[in-house]
Length: 112
Image (cartoon, rainbow, N blue to C red; front, side, top):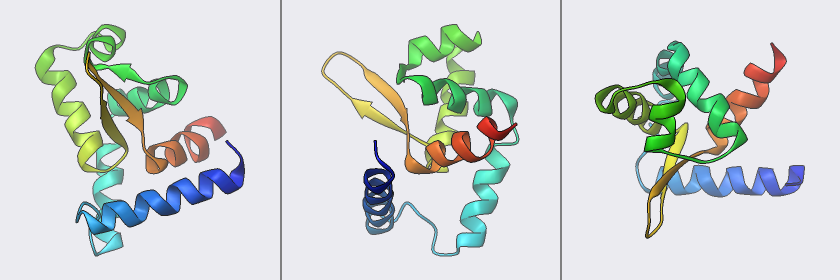
């Protein structure tokens, strides 16, 4: 994906999240909740793994040795802070990074 395509995707995604009321009006609160979610190393590692490929719930559970409740809790936190989203298909649902999640992996994790 070119930088121009990535910028367009991010702009479209932000507009969609605002239209759907998923992004908080107060950006400080929005960033605060995201930072709070990313303090957990399991959630950070899930983002890194999703940066490599989309994954199903079962794949995430196996990769990180999580029980159903743990996986669902962590993925719900990442979804609520708009770092990941679920792509539904007829067979299964996959988790993918949003532009926000991609930004975290690119700007934080990859610079360590």
